[in-house]
Length: 128
Image (tube, rainbow, N blue to C red; front, side):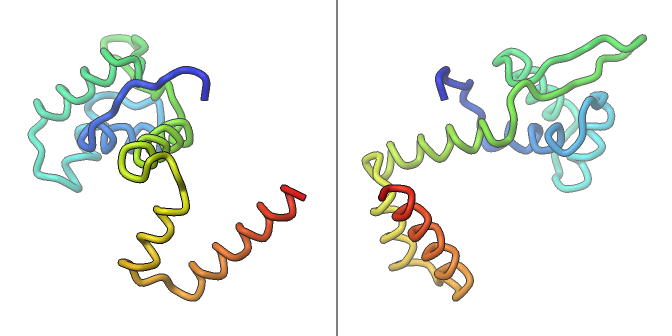
């Protein structure tokens, strides 16, 4: 990823999730979607939406008397940056300590282990 994306808080990421699932959407639709899953007040949701606009993570387009909101970055772009930030901040930029941590402290299912083996095999073949 060449340019740095704006930092998005956990609360803002919930607003982005609504936009990633469907866009464009009106602020009323976004408020309704978030109030189903949270006890957030409408003003809180609108504040988060405005922060995302200010950061350039979302855009608004006038549609008659209302605005329709859309994300300006993909979920994949955000996940990539968040993953990189976690690795850099917590594991010195290295993936293996993260995997060691999860294998030692989390219950990995047989499916998880099989997927990791498959991934490692693919990485190894690619490196040859």
